[in-house]
Length: 381
Length: 222
Image 1 (tube, rainbow over the protein chains, first blue to last red):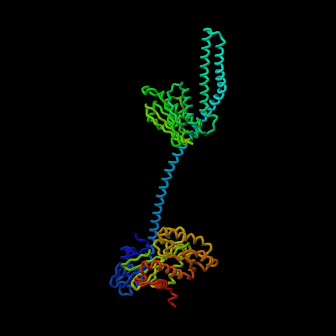
Image 2 (cartoon, rainbow over the protein chains, first blue to last red):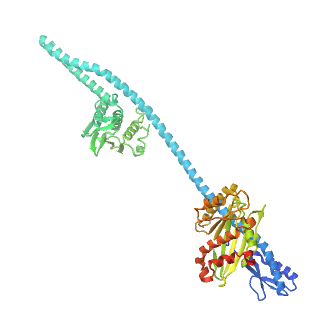
Image 3 (cartoon, each protein chain N blue to C red):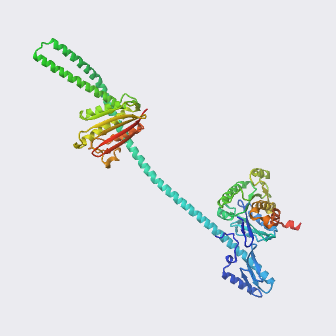
């Protein structure tokens, strides 16, 4: 493109019609016709504009006439060129400004699109965060409820612990007294039967008291009421307690295999870990109950292994399994497949959050109708 | 950029007078037009003004023909100084071979000088020129007004720049205008001599270049 400052040619300055008119007017002024052409003729003199020869003037009656005519044309060209230069410059700058405006417009559009996208993402993020807050609130509510139940259980256990202690001890002494009585009473048939029956009654009572003591002890471990938040915990012991509680819940009918390795203690919150392990065991027990009978006897395998300063826990069952369609939702809060009233749908949620809080991982492998394996990994101290 | 066309053996150079509004750029050009008497001198074109202020630009063409037939043209332009005419300034500045920065010596105008110089730097970059290599002369104009900033103060302020020493001028009185122009020609020659073989091919040495383009009426009379 020609720049505004390029030296103008005759064509740039005058249209053919204008040139013709100028030739006519000049010829009328001079004694003989004159012509202005872009190229040099024999007798021509230069028509100059700004040191630049823009054309050649020929004809006229004398060199003097040509010279004067040429000067007149140069004088006129000056004003024509002035306008042309200004117009060209104006055109150039307008185009440049327009191009700049377009560039800015494009940039603005791009930035607007970026902000629109960002705002969309922001809305999505806000929604996600709101959901997280809602869940956390629910979990908090749930966990504080569990904690108060735990407190209550621990309180009850503590209150029962003393009486059951002296009941056990008294029953032991009573059994000794019974043996003494047997020597003092006449050895009649009726007396013997009475004493044997008495002996059995006391024996059963001792067993009963022992079971009460064991449950109380499990409850105490489970609720961990007398432990600080984080402490060294023996995962095997937590598992054993949880299994005992589960067995009590299910009337000692579950077939649970324990394969507990010698594993290091880990730093953790025993109450929350116990709750999580219990939830997982409870799920396994439910799965067995819901399983079809052709799977054979329902079994739960509980396994712990130590590996590279990590503790692996596997709780596996051959129960009903999880259908593929539900797999992605199992960790969602309030997701449950059980009938209304039999579970809040928080078991796995609590377990996952607890494991995460312990910087561990939880993984679920399951096939519908075959069984489920939950693998936990918890970092050591 | 200097433009050489071999078919008519013509070399066109462009010098732009830059500076804040009302610093005297057009006055510089008018004085050059009346003071200079170079071999060839065209009309001073004052394109358009409103209230004595340049709207587009002014242009003064001067030139010389060397013995080798080189048709050397120097086109002197001014830009409009007012802030709002920036796109015009940029268009005129593009392809410049040299710049004369006309600053205003009055204390009240020092901020405007700085802004205009910053604008020059910016626009040079936009049109692809480098302020550090472009021949540039800084003139402090209006020395005739009383209360202007002291010369030593100005010289000290600019002493660390490549454009020191500054040239003091009173364009209205025709003082320092030719000196400014000659200094610019001197720096311009350094830049273009090698590229266009001024001395080796056309026999134009530095002294010839400067004197023949800036011959003044006074010298002729002497």
